[in-house]
View 1: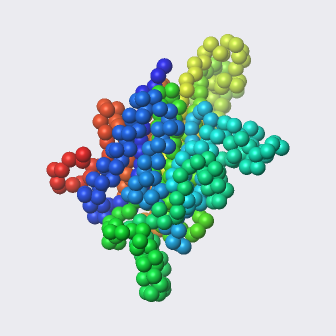
View 2: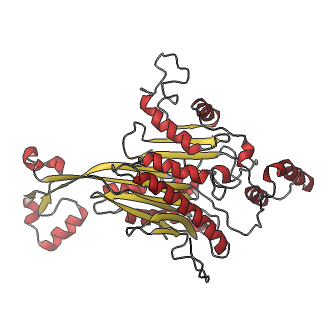
View 3: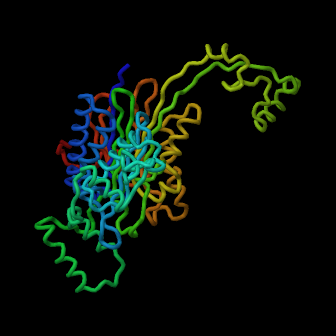
Length: 438
């Protein structure tokens, strides 16, 4: 049975406030997210797969200098860009997840991650080139590897025909000024002026940064559910402003900044067997011991594996497909320390009755695991700040999920009534103007 396609986007999360996000700027981001949402929705309606739709959505954001990815990526401490991207599906691909890191010449990192995933279908065992003639190690070129970076990854990108660019393509005046303001004091004024002249030819009349206006941090991402019930999450980022060269964040780390999985849920009627000793005890003592010793109570339910009659028990079971997919945005090191998205997925899968919305709230919501991971540094260093978007497929229906613990998170989706939604804060943007969002 066909599933109704769903999608949700995020464009970064962090210390966003109405004071550093003017309403006019909010409208720019909203318009960009709506454009991506509409384009991706049209693709899904035309039958595109979740993989094709999600990666195209992220490609559009990579080409937009408003976002911290691709064209709008931040600079590292050395004044260079090092891009990251990842993709993961719930089914249909051997590798399921692929990521790329430390890129500075691949125009659209998300397309390279996608190529690795798709070409992984012909990678064979992936342990070596199998004695064949392909020096790159397999028909797909990436062997069985799920994560590649630097020159190796970019050589594959060029070999596979992806668009390559000079690093200057990624430079924007606002990000460069953000980089300079964030550096430690002590750089000579003459040296700074030389840097400015070196890059002036790339900027032209591009508007600068006033040091106050919010510039999106963290990852951009898209989670998509297609009509076949497959889900895909695609993410891309420039990382943290003034990060050390070579730093790798949560965006390309499977289970930290992104996750997708599908499983078959089994429901069955529990058989009951008596525990004679327990039934000889008073009810109060039985309850106390039952709390301390699982399975001690007078009647104990049998799990599927404990069935006395497997054939008979099979009639009692029903099964259904359930799946989740998530993308995170915020302080990547905190996502790494908590394995944020995989933890949320595991909670939804292995804790009976737990919805993905509840699991995401426990990880990324106010007071959740991300915030707790910052300990007494919360609110001082940016640690622990972030949010997660996702979709949960249950009983053939896709449910949109999103939560965050910081000032705001740009997100866009189409709700259950078919209305396009764009939000950055918990509530609607507190504007006093009557100007429409679009």
